[in-house]
Image (cartoon, rainbow over all chains, first blue to last red; front, side):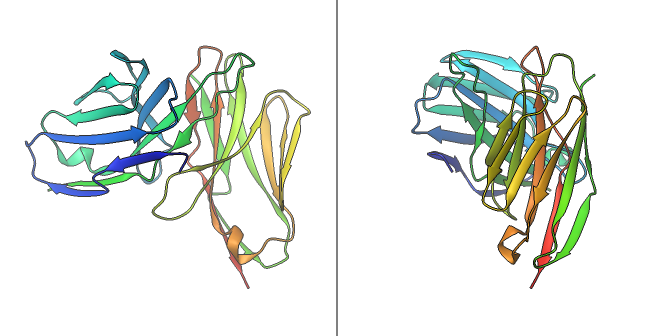
Amino acid sequence: DAGITQSPRHKVTETGTPVTLRCHQTENHRYMYWYRQDPGHGLRLIHYSYGVKDTDKGEVSDGYSVSRSKTEDFLLTLESATSSQTSVYFCAISEREARGAYEQYFGPGTRLTVT
Amino acid sequence: EDQVTQSPEALRLQEGESSSLNCSYTVSGLRGLFWYRQDPGKGPEFLFTLYSAGEEKEKERLKATLTKKESFLHITAPKPEDSATYLCAVLSGDYKLSFGAGTTVTVRA
């Protein structure tokens, strides 16, 4: 998984509680991403980061926030979890080289269930 | 709006029975088209990047091709270990990456 770990790998939480997922990389890549994957949908971007303390929203950012205080760590927080946020969450990294290589490499995922 | 459509949704093959998966797309200013493989319970694994129409890439029994409107992933003489979900994604001119829903391939021995 290209030097990417995610924690926890599984979590069950109750509606209304805050939840934080962690992504850690050892590749020193500049870009980091959080996606969610749901049946019948492709991977959908939640938030991404293009450097320490530099983040931006993706297409499904409502109810989520992120932080990146170190190159290697990217945190995703569900401020008040809802059942619609039950999903599998993937972290990805990439390094945009000068010749335009934009491949993203994915972590193993976190399965989150909100009851 | 960028769109990526993969077909079929599911494909069942006999070992050795070659076939193709389709990824059709509409995007403004294609910067690249990516193929990934995803095994159950795991993250997507990068396979190929295609940058321009006419380009082809190969890896073992997989071959990816690209036209201006679609990409094909050809699986030649598949083996049971080729069973997985194959994802296609396109990167637009404004660096937005859009994924298709995937094709689940099952290869029977």
